Image 1 (spheres, rainbow, N blue to C red):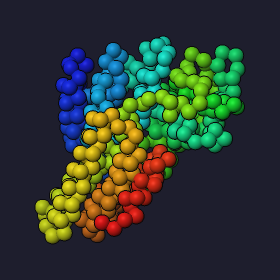
Image 2 (tube, rainbow, N blue to C red):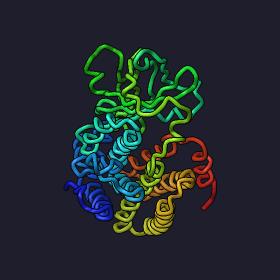
Image 3 (tube, helix red, strand yellow):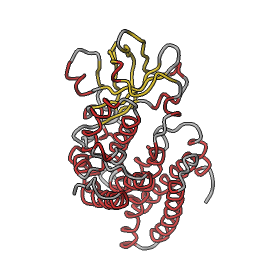
Image 4 (cartoon, one colour):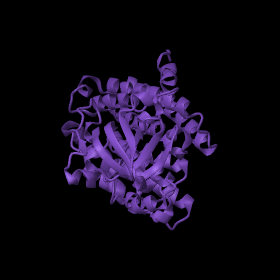
Length: 368
């Protein structure tokens, strides 16, 4: 199914969330265990997400995107994560890339990249979260030269690195100013001149199939025309990126739903404590979902770290309950409970900074 961009916003939102839920159960969830076991990039599943138009959820309709409201964007990722968190994570990194490609004042860059990113013909990746930290810690540096900049260093956490056409990347200048640029990653790698290279995928505890790794620049020339934003200070803090701040929280809820579905299946077969666990988790997830909807409907972005920390704690508890429900069998490497348990830990280390860690600990370091 491909969602029409000509329908009104409310209809597009409803269709997108419904299609994400359908894909989660029909396509994403059935391949999750196999992708985790092999570490193979889930190309077919990502293609299905793209074919539905969901990779263009934040892109304006003028460029072929769905331009979904922030709440619908979050709910799309909630549904995708309920199917498979690795696929949802890959899609979320494309989503983060598209929000910055949309935010650039350079019309030529929007025209070049957004139509292909909206349809999934092009895939986007990003490497810029380090811009939230002091400039002396920046792993990617740039120096001004005639017509642009020379970049040298490393982007340490790039997802779908071997499968992406566009890399929205950050760098820091000698004076501490920041840049965000649109790097044509696939084309640059095809030149084979060594100016850009990609390491082998990291051997992660979970989400290894996401093809997350290090992208390196060795005196790579970035033309002025490829600069999305900057130079300037605190680009990530001064550029409004809409609903992206709530996507990880929504994904925790999706993963909680996967855990809950598993626990309820076990409860139907075994009864006993699994039924009690399912009831507690359902109530906790429903309360969290209500609060997420309320925050997005009110345009309350200041509460994002609070809800993110709460979601991190809830998904950890949910996965632990799923493991308990699965019993000894669930601890086998070929069984789903242990995978959900490993994946839940990822949320506590995914781009956590500022108030997110204290908020996570607030909910983890309590008895309930």
